Length: 420
Ligand SMILES: Nc1nc2c(ncn2[C@@H]2O[C@H](COP(=O)(O)OP(=O)(O)OP(=O)(O)O)[C@@H](O)[C@H]2O)c(=O)[nH]1
Ligand SMILES: [Mg+2]
Image (tube, rainbow, N blue to C red; front, side):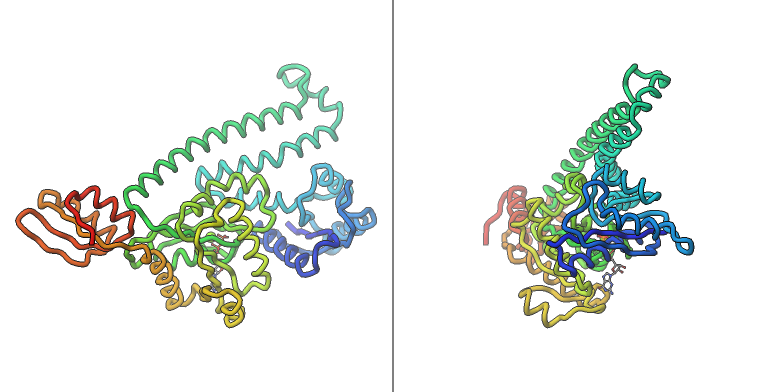
């Protein structure tokens, strides 16, 4: 598919911001496999209420789309536009029009793998489509109503109404499935946490910042890494490797983007919930991207929106091997980590910084493990650092250091304990 990207620049948007956004739309288009063959912009006081671009500009764009030598198949609009604007624009340009929201929804749709992600994306897509079907039905006019008579369905209901009802029912169905899955996930997660009392860090940040690459480097595991936007749509959880004390779980999360479609913010909340549960956020930023400051700000905003503002975080400037000013970053963001996921030493430094954060809350205690309960040794060793071990006739005394909560839980379990 050959695409032309287009946008109206209103006075409140700076040139830099405007260009960055269009560049991002190009990358989104590339992720969908489109070839971007043109860029068409207009400065205007506001979007045209009927068809987004002004009428003269629509004429110009129409010619560009139907260029004899290099015709385009589709026009991508860098804003969310209304159903009627889309409809009118399509009619005038004589080709398909996709707005930014639809482009993002389409990427999410193609990349969703797990049942949860699929259901969430489907709900968002149906929510987006409903008013557009209404518009199409309106444009089709009374003919639509007449046609429905042959459909064998309840008389007087138009195809449009029927479709809308089907959409509503389908959304309801998906929501139920999702609630059931969410419940399962929650109890699973609760059980896992109870068992391990664990330290959690979530990798968050703008799409393509390198979260999955870091996840892979930090945990020695395979996470999907791709030079695509929204490569990751599910949260994966793995332990830091080599293992640390306390054991730290790392989760990789869905990437953020400016103007994330509303339906998706809501439906992805459950994915981002992982971020809320973490005791530490590693906010990954692509330092080599000229627009990194805006990306950083967008991520901060979304984190605030989902109520994760209070979670402690480390700022990680990644991809420094590709570009970026290390000295300036350090001066401007005290305490930040500047690194490249491609350098082993850098990854080790990040791993240490994460481990150090969790070691701040470590406490020491002495646990008593009777000989009859030696099968529980593994549990102690998994959640604590065993500093010293003494044995007597009845069992073993273990002096341990571990996360305050884990130690508290172990103390409950291993009766005769005394604090150090
Ligand atoms: N040069 C360089 N490239 C990197 C670095 N870290 C990641 N990349 C590349 O950046 C691209 C995106 O990396 P991912 O790890 O998939 O990014 P992500 O943040 O998980 O992206 P989403 O899942 O889309 O949100 C890939 O092509 C990586 O190989 C780095 O430190 N240096
Ligand atoms: Mg990823």
